[in-house]
Length: 227
Length: 311
Image (tube, rainbow over all chains, first blue to last red; front, side, top):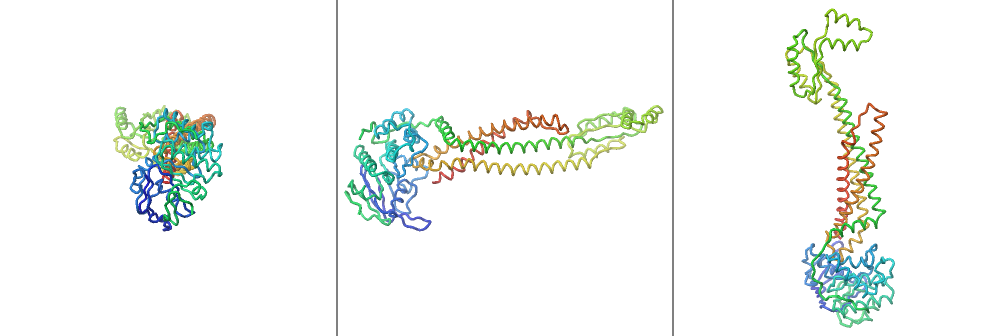
């Protein structure tokens, strides 16, 4: 569950109000788009969700963690409860596909034997088993994003946050990635939050849409369109 | 879409397992993957260590040679003329128990005359005549070597207080000047050594920082997927340690070769200079290289990581 309550976020450097009195609740198992044009506050919202920054006022509850009060030493544990997918994939360029996925499990202290069983299974389901020994630069953009999703799923998080997941790939691959995220949501009941500015994406898949504009939530509708 | 097997709704409860060998293996893998930067770091660190080593050994050897020069000084004590032998021996005993006395050599007036005869070649008959006529103008004497040049004034005073001592010959001014010169040289060279050490540490730390900074993006990703600070830091600390160990071994071998060649050259060509034996100081050099190498490697890693971990 994700809950924003009257969240205000101001950048001290230039007193810019990035988010202003933002409130919404995303229940377990929902698939939600967070949309908005450039400067709407999407990046700030993603940073808040990843606990890269804390809100100036208001509260954010994610997976029962109160992010405003979360001490620094507990941030790694909180981040392990999320699976994050980035526009630029953020894979380890010198690690193989297998190592990239396995690393997320090593971080949480997963025993080697379990990693050896689970990683091939995930790669197989993502259609990446033949690429296990390749390094990211040997893969297409779509394949790299699938590796990023595989890594995000490695520790079975309850929530997947995808920040512009189709921003760096061609339309056909983008459709595949979206199908994959929807499948993960429907099959395993994971909460999926897709942050995007892509009209096509939002209008094609017809899920709940939270629209941001100049730091405020201007609409929140199920089956909404990018207006 | 294929099925994802064994994917649980809740994260699996399991016992955490962090294998220390995993961190060591990860450190070696990182070193190999960034081998150009790794080799550059090792070479920079080794070069700085050799430079530091050369300068330190120079300071050690300057001290050794200055000590040798200062230790040429000795005091000669002349007793009163025609003192009976037992009184002369008694004076000898009193001298031996004085503080700062290293050795005492008794020189009888006959031996003194023989020594002068040897020094003044061509005038042997004059000295022979003196000896035969019993008209030896010298008195019995003691040649004293002392331990600490800085306490020679006190020794000189104590010798003059002994009854039966007629004259004390010393080179007090020369000894004091040499001691001051030695101290001055030591201070200057140790000052240079400290500056060189600071500069070297700065260069080494910055080289290691370059290596760590090349992993900045990787560290950010590690943080995003929930890696704790210690999980990120440990492999880099191990990397810094490995770089330090490799560098100190290379530096030690190079230092040994340079010093060995110098020892050979001094032994054959410049015998007036004395070099401290590498066998005696090699252990200290090795330990110092290892300590400086590892410390700077680890400190460099920590400083760079501290900055990156704030992200």
